[in-house]
Image: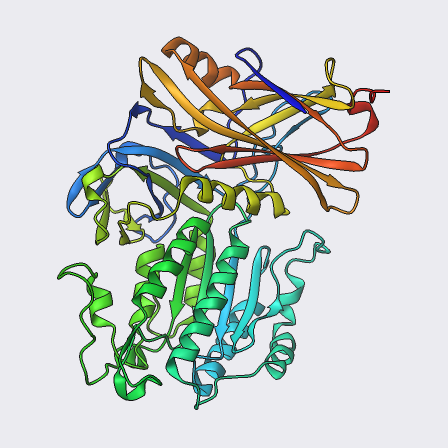
Length: 516
């Protein structure tokens, strides 16, 4: 049992590591928000961390777009807000994780490239002063095999120690995996690779912020000619790329493929089969044919906002991926409703400031129902509930006290940072659509229960100005199971798909006496 009501008084949340600015606007014409994760560098190749919304211009198929959402994300230590007794915040002096995963593909790469990549990886990692939030996996026919796995929340704090021992760790991992079999059919390798990439992206979805995968590979075919196919007919793998692109987009992952330029430029003698209407496929897809084509390296980078390194420079790709995660920008816009035509839309992002280089995904497939809102929300909340990190896109705090009206319950005074929400002007007021989810865990960290409550509100301009200082403050009572020792509050913004969460311990002093 829980009760929800709203208040508009209190102490506002201070600015934290994620500095946000939202452009409130009228109701959008299109059915869904397109979001871009952008890296900006100055003329010296250094991150440009002081850009503002007006510095950017976005074009969708050549048409300028109105920016509806703008955020700057940094991995700096967040300024801890002032907290009272039994009050907890997701921005209480934490450093947002900046996850980079090295993925050495031993299924789609020849032995020569594997040996070259191994030497570069070892040399690059041994020189790192710190490898915090850096992980390393092998991709083989058996799936993903860890050399150094993603953080589990139980690390010993020696973040850089494993990189000094990376060579024996890698040798041990390589000795346990089954490498590429020359007799593997192309479609078998493609299917196994996409399954592994789906699994990795899904795992990374539970980590907040921008993530990077440095994928060292020869690449995958987008088409297989009839002579190389087990079915005797040509096969087109572009639909698989589109589906994986959706998973990667929702997980906020950028892929930095690394491969051999000579291999990437190989082409099958037969042209790729035509798919869809003329102009539906982007240039890099129409160029990518052949059994051993490396065209997918460009495709993955272009669809995710990463950068393809076709010079086989593994060390440069690792360094670039790690640096790009330290400062980035998130931009969202609503294409016109008639733009959702199922075709590929090219995106161009420019910066008005002189000398700034922009790196962002170059396009998307404009499916009107790419994923149902309910499904997207459920996937995001489920990933955040499982994560060892708190999500900080939306800043929030929760103050605990025993409920005065519900037996065996805790009362939460919640403060949500209004500047982190996408609020739309509708019917004479600023409209917000949030979902509050309260998850309870036992002493072993196992989930006991989860309760979801919608929270809708409309504010005048004066109320919005006040909320920008004081925060938006719903209050809620939740009944607590006797075996619960920890809880997590998740706030999901249905307009922007942004999410924040805060985790706190539960003890007997926090809940009211149980009913008799």
